[in-house]
Length: 499
Image 1 (tube, helix red, strand yellow):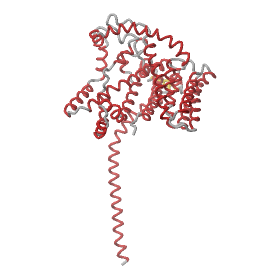
Image 2 (cartoon, helix red, strand yellow):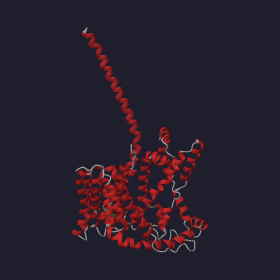
Image 3 (cartoon, helix red, strand yellow):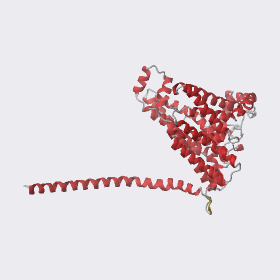
Image 4 (tube, helix red, strand yellow):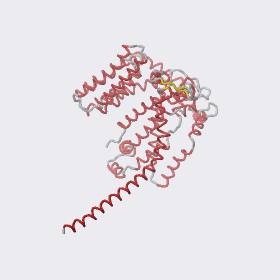
């Protein structure tokens, strides 16, 4: 009887092994087929995408001028990049463009919302097709068309301004704005500059207050965080006192100290460290001539926050912080736009033929107006994909609660497409920091008159192909890569749907 049981169990175990072997072979064939399909794409990415970027990183340590010159110079390119005034001045225009692009996001968002609210399926489809049609126009042709718009004699911009009366308004503004700037000058020279250091210091104080007020709990750990922030604010002022004219080794040691401090912040403060290094870096740029003001500004912020929070809880103190920060930032922006930009008459509007791309005072307005009405095809489609995923039950509940169509935008639709907004913010930031084609075609490799249109991407292009400093251009590219990476981390952390 036992012999029979043993004989019956042997085929069963043998069958199990065969099934497992067959299953393993089938799974192996499937994986082999899948990896075989992915392999060409992976090899292409490694060769044509990753290898050039790795090569850029390696060449940033060389004095490289192909095909003959290739000399290892270590970190000399990076040291020169950090002390290059033209490179860092090019970020001024980028900062203006980033702020302007935040405003330019709104036409695309509103257009996507309008498309999503069209009831007729046929009309919605037709409108979407109309938005996609401009994608077939080559970008180079699009840029050349816009360049023709700015022609002083035959351009569409000047013809429209002359026909609509806008040129007369600009001619009046050419007198009124310098006069207003002259009236605001005493406010800045007698109060803002002595107290806050500059208009930028006023805006920075508002940003410090807003960032410091985001802490919800007043636990004991905040004192360690405050000490960490103060240490970061004191690094550069103390370094400047120790060595007013730093050499290469000194610059590298300070950079290493700043990097170590940021890593300490990441460990000590958790997610809160992301915003503060950018704010302190902005403080260095604002107070570069008087760095002692940076720790003073931060200390005043922390004292103010502690005083308000000692009397109000987080919910009650929130309006105070919001109003104060918005007042300081708004006042600073008001002074900049009305008192620091249009300070002298341009004298280009009397004849009705201003040279938008040939005058150093009109280059930036022309760049900001470029692409009007700022409704990008890809951006609208991305927003529309997010809007179409919103359940109709949400809209029905909002209507029952009495939410108006305009209220739907800010209470329902905009909060629920923040993921798509984040994607467009990342694309917009990368494009703004790296693009140079627009400025090269519209203004030339020197950035137009007075270098007003110089941006980091154009400066990198000019360093490589006009000056032949390919290694230095690679180092500039690596600096841009780090800046973009940090900004992307900030967007991933703070721009998201609040579940």
